[in-house]
Structure formats: C-alpha cells, structure tokens
Amino acid sequence: MDDTANPHTPSPEDQFPGQGETKNSSGLQYKQHPLYYFNDANLFLKARNSSFIYGVYKGLMEKFSATFEACFTLPQPAGIEEGSIFEKPILLPVDAAPLDALCSFIFHLGWKPHNHRTTDELLALGKISQLLQCPDALKFTIQALKFRTFDFNKARKLFYAFKFGVPNWGYSATAEILTSVNGVGSITGGFTIDMEIHKLLLEGESNLALQIQLLAREMPNLNNNATWSQCPQRDWCMKTLIRDWETVCPAIAQTRGGIRQVKILVKEKVENDHSFALMRRECREVLCERVSQVIENIETFVNRAAGERVKARIKRDYPSAHDDEGWAI
Ligand SMILES: [Zn+2]
Image (tube, rainbow, N blue to C red; front, side, top):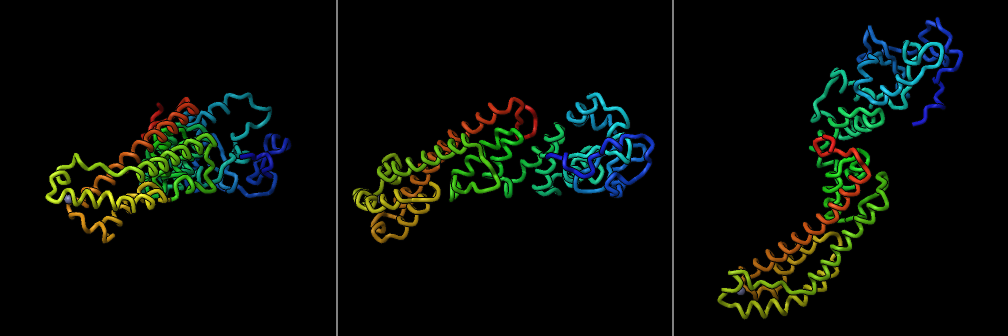
C-alpha cells in the first residue's frame, strides 16, 4: 500500500508549471483510459500497475469517497496541484483491476450485474471501496456476496466478516467451519484469523467433541416414540439395543471429522451389523432417526453459541458494522 517507492512519484521539478508533456519524469508514456476518461475531466488518477490515466470528476469522486473528500480539503503545496492535469495524476496505491471495478460502479460504464462478476472481482471491489472509503460500493459488494455460497464460505467468509465488518457472515462461517469435515483445522494459510476468534472456534469444536463423548456413553431413550413403545416384540428390540449399543459406543467416541460423521456411523452400523438385524426394521429406523435428531440439536446448539460469540466480537470491533444486505447497523 506504500507508493513512496513508486518511480512515477512526482519530483519537486515536476511542480513547475507549463510542462505540457504527456511523458512523466521517468519517460513513461501516459495514455487515456479507454473507458474512464472524460474529455472535460478535472481529476486525473493513475493506478500503480498501468500507464492509463483515469480522467474523472473531482466533485463526483468526493461524493463517493470520503478519502478523496478528505484529500481535497487538505492544503495543497504550491505549484500545479496533484491530479489537476493529465501529466500529473494522483498515483493511487491500487492496481488497475480494482480501480476499474470501482469506476464501473461509479460511472455505470462497463457495468456488470453482480451475477456476472466473480467472487474475486467482488472482493477486489470491496477492498478498494474500503481503502478509499466508498460506502455505497462496499454496500453493493456485501449485498452481492450474499449469493456466493460456493466459493465464499468458511475461513474466507470469516476473514472478510472481519475485514468488511459483517457480523452475520461471522455467525454463518462459524457454523460452516464447525460442521466441516476438518473443522477448525480447515483454516489454512491466506486467511489470518484473529487469535481470539480462533480460540472461540476451538472452544466450539471441543464442545462438539465433548457432546460426542456424552452421546457415546448414553443409550438413546426411545420410550417416547410410539413405534418403539408399541412394538409387538418390544422386549426383544430393547434387549438388542442394550447389547448392541455397547458395540457402537467406542466407535462413536472415536469419531473424528465433524459430529455429522456420528450420524453416518450409527446408520451404517444399525443397517449393516448383523446383530442389529434382530431388531425390527421399524425400530431400527426409529433408532437412526433419534440419533440424527440428537446430533442436529447438538450441532445447532453449539454452532449457535459459538456463532453468537464470533458475531458479538465483530460488532465490538466494528462500531459501524453492516448487515448482510450491506446496510450500516
Ligand atoms: Zn421393535
């Protein structure tokens, strides 16, 4: 983000008026941006990795961006004001791609509806919106990302929940991480998660592990189920359950990779272990159904508790957080 080392940063010599060249001090030829250059422009911008000059409007940029607004109220040094002529653009510490995305938002030129933009494009727009403090563009980004569940979830979503200040993303990403096969271990490089949040996630994960142990120890009580309690061979089914649950317990206790695995494991055992075959089919179904219900309840409870804490943490850090429609909350 530091552009002081940029060779195109104007030197004091550049400030002498009347140098009507289209070459800057490094001899690089500036060109008008093919799309975002207006003939009556009064503000000239340049991205760090392109020689295109964006010829736009000061008043408009001020309205969209609090950063520009603050910039223009600062006293300017003597000489030609930076950004006021083509030859002396403001060098923005951003790449051309996000600047194009922001210009397309502001001018609706080269406009793409959100469903024609990739998640990366949206995130780039969000980042530049945040850097240049453009609340409307950030709102558009947050709203559009709502529909990206495929490539915007878990650790990535949690990371941006903090970056853009969206507590609800933190809530849903927590559940996505805790229910994923690798759990908190699935958070890998690239997405730095705050230590405190990492701790909250690990707590959620160990709560789930604890619940799995409790579940393994306790035989499901099916007495309140009509099919089970009115079974013509109830005693036989009960005896089978008592005996066979003993064999299921250790397997449950050793389950790794998300509590949902327990559901799969029990179903597999009950359906395929020949000892369970002594239980009536309807009663076996009741057993599987009950186990999956208990697991869903545990999952919902733990995810909700961890999610709420992550959400509260984001709200605490962000006095001006957004809801998932992008509105300030
Ligand atoms: Zn039965």
